[in-house]
Image 1 (cartoon, rainbow over the protein chains, first blue to last red):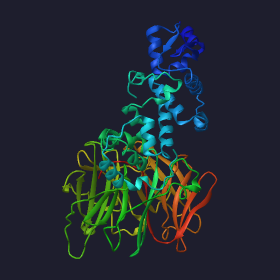
Image 2 (cartoon, chains in turn cyan, yellow; image 1 turned 120 degrees about the vertical axis):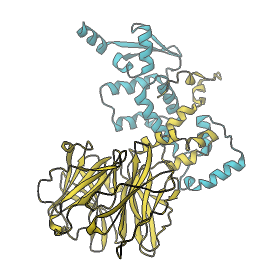
Image 3 (cartoon, helix red, strand yellow; image 1 turned 30 degrees about the vertical axis):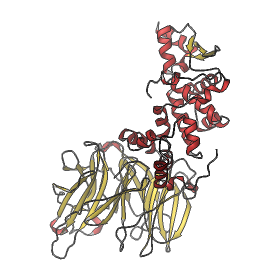
Length: 160
Length: 383
């Protein structure tokens, strides 16, 4: 019985349906790495197409690509660098939020570090827009803070 | 990672294709990203909004940031040209080709020494806080990344005739109270083994005296904090000549404030000198013989079977035992490359030794001056 189960999970694929109605296949062992997906499988069974309302066809393939590499233990620094090389900041943000929704920890950690790295060359104004935060300081408060932290603004060439 | 299935579901559908990129990042997820920034950028972006600014003072966030930062080892160095300059710099030790340690991402910190004659001596760094020994009655704590400085209360030390005595400081984390401590070991009248040991906890305003050191003669430059203990080297008999000292590792348990001895590894030969330090959060001993230095770490504190020899560094370049001021600074994660600071003909050489290939590469050369160098990580902790 046990033998049957293990062979079924190793070759089994799960169907995932994105919020915009597209269906993608993923290996069960990769799906396990995404806790949200695994929970849905536990609730709905692995023969049903799992609906992912908050993930879309633009980003899911990329996520699947990452975990395909993960289950074969092939994630290296070079792979990760390649993975994000051609993504712009907004695309990384979408992936990051999707990784959070899917509770895909490894990818989440990697992308949060990648976003942190990208922020180093950004201005405070850009960061506000990117994160969607309002500046709730008064102009006086803000300039006082900036003065206290003047050294942290120095020496960086900011791109926009 | 918290369950936030609800928060990312709050999409505002604006009716066009790019609505996904207008999504904002919820605060808890933003904190995850911010915890991975180096302190400089964290301080810069804390001016973004009030909630982000309050994060850097939040003890939970400070701990979270430290957990990430702790993996990014740096080297902090103080360079002193007596009566002239005192410079504090830090360099990255992680994820770099070794020959660019001193060329890439170097940071300089503003620091005015307290001791204007002999300058502040860098004792150790723990979790982003540096401990300087000013003199035998005064120590100072400083976090260079956030620029916060704390002068400790004056340590009272007794005088015994002409002997002013000597204070060995140690600084580190005490897990029993989840706080940081400075421990001072003051010894005087060495023949009578007179000592006074005191403890200062961060946030307090006084030193507290504890049980005296056992009747051995301390021989350390710092008290090494490991796993809720503080450790020093000491030797037994002053009457014996220097060649046959019998060393012991004396360990102070911070919870019970009692002392016991830590068993040393079998060094496998005649050892002339020992140095006690911290490496990879483990108790570490350098055993110096006339032909090599071995780096030993105690992988499991208190377990004598867990002593492991990490690397052996032969004496090269005319280094000889008694005039050798070579400092072993850091063993890289590959357990193979070692960063050393050597003195040679009035110059200081920063050298990386490759133990597999037995090669030496000089990564920086400078004129001789007084240099102290310790492993450092950035943090937001306030001393």
